Image (cartoon, rainbow, N blue to C red):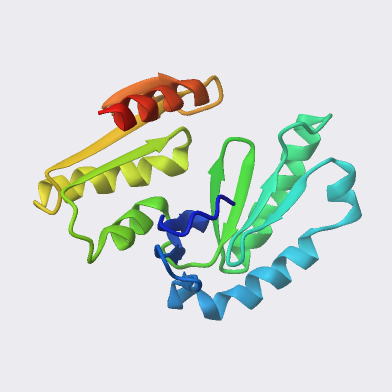
Length: 194
């Protein structure tokens, strides 16, 4: 979405990596075989009933996200989402819950922690900073701690973004807590000024 060629990007919870200067995104090979099944599941789940409940389907390649934030009837939308989760699990797929979102994933490890580890492999860095506000970011926090314990990083700084909808663990596990996007911008401005 940003498109700055001198920056490396990690997407889809760590399953996609675009290195600085490259035009090709590298997708975790373990996901390729599952992509078609996930897409088919999405086609079957995307019914007019689901859309009438204002559940939005987001296609992330090997991951499907079902968002119900803003649905007029939150309980009805959540009931529809619970049914999708049950169908996904009975089909051998995995479910991952976030803030008013259900992700349906293949039974392959996909998380931001694995993505951070993959992203840092081969790079000659001894410091890393990660900013997160949701349950999915806790995996990245844990991996930063592991990389420091393993001696791979000298410092792994975890910044938690406090929000009414975010899990309390973001605040308790973070090294620094900020309020919203403005707080993140303040930290980045401070780092850029040194």
